Image (cartoon, rainbow, N blue to C red; front, side):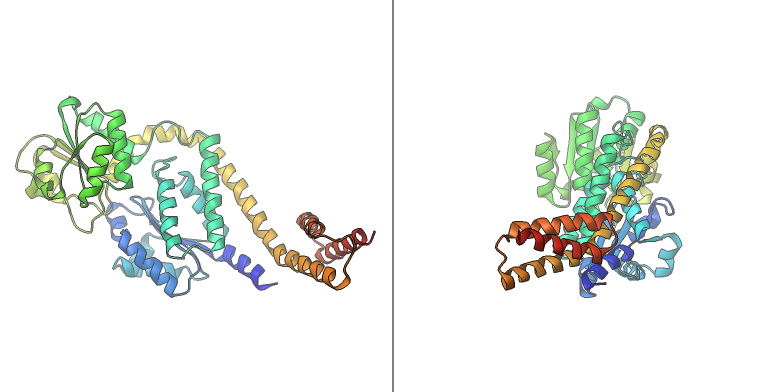
Length: 405
């Protein structure tokens, strides 16, 4: 087997995933292993320093996973634990590891929303794309991993088009809207404060404007410029982050979706006593647990917000078999593509030999087009027949016949 063929073979079998998600761990545990943007860069840079050809960290409110190329998935567990200041033994209690086709299948399920806490939630897709771009910038996405990710995006698109797995408007950000409607009366005179204006905060902001009859919405963020841009985009108010305390005290509804290693929303912010709803969609949690003890204040975390969509999820479960069939069909396509990569070195060799023969013997009827045609025909034959040696000899004989007659 050639070196290149070995590379493709090893890539498929070495493709792995280590991770932790909502299935085996609660919000507090997931928060401990969550990766910030800076920590993600550290993981990627350390992976590159170890000459790891493929590494893709994905950290969301419901999961932290590292997709990689290695025969030893433990290397990714170590990278995650070292950069989140955790012990490997603790990670092993809640984590999972997949290798080879099983890992590819898991990637497909994640990309399609089949493995989301809210089945069919496609917010994960944009998060996967963003994570891929970051990993690419650090040179941590090799050819095979990029191909696997492209297949995952293809699966996601096909499932969204051909099934009702994502029917209706269901996501964590929309679930937040449903809770606000359920727990709040007279929404028109309520003040809403959105803390955190990243991509997830953007989804929340859009749903606020689309589905709630509220005119008094304010945005704040550690980076004032980002909050101001989003406020202008949605025709809302901008509040400088230095006024976070007073803004929280004035608000009736607070939605927190910012990434922080420490609590951003503190009990000391609230001097007024009035009914107040706080939705903490951050991982780790950004609202100090003591805030829950304040009279009239309701605080819900991302797991509690997600649970309101249970009825919709039951309806979506009927679409799971269709989605799984699409995943299985695409897995077969990936396997076929992978198998054909073993023929590429042989095809290149035959092509090179034909050009060399032309230079040596100066065939009258030869042309680059005929060589390409011969190689293309051979590729088709190799796809359906296993006798590579016989097929190569036949291809050479056919070429010699055509160029001498």
